[in-house]
Length: 111
Length: 116
Image 1: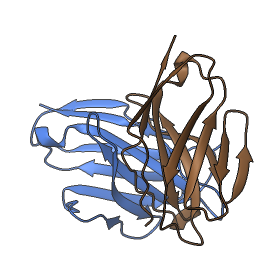
Image 2: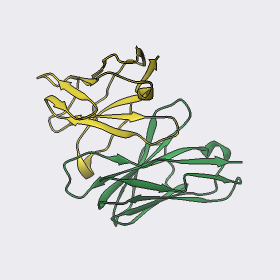
Image 3: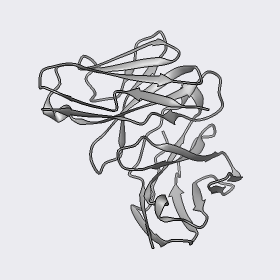
């Protein structure tokens, strides 16, 4: 399973764009990149998933370079409620997809 | 869509007793469910992978006789913590992947277990 490396913590202010980069140098050909958000005492919540290039949904964008050895989660105009831990995971999908969580990035959004 | 529930959301029990936690996929069929444990200020740790109708696959270091997993249907998996001790106190989270879905795992809200 591909190991991921993320910054342990990040600070931001309300209204700013936040970019969290994740390194996954040994990503496999059939691996997808998935980001989750977790609030204290809650299960992780799916944010976005991609395989290559760029993916955008209503809450975030995911940028993946051609070599797929890293990815960047972009959160536009964060608010205080975006304060959470963000996990980058790499793995196969569906019922073959065992996910191994790294330490995640604790994002603190300040007023 | 893709909703996973857990029951109970929290439980307190005495040392030596057994506790059962249920994980249900509410709007899809889950051939595979996963069980995680999370201690305070730490990341999620995968305990086991549960496939419907077969025995669970446990991660290294997880005692299969202590953490009994049953995945009897495509919408329900249970985790039973047997002879619980205070060190088993943790946040237990399940996730589920759908049948033939080219998408990811969806997580339940978690169960807080406190063993006195």
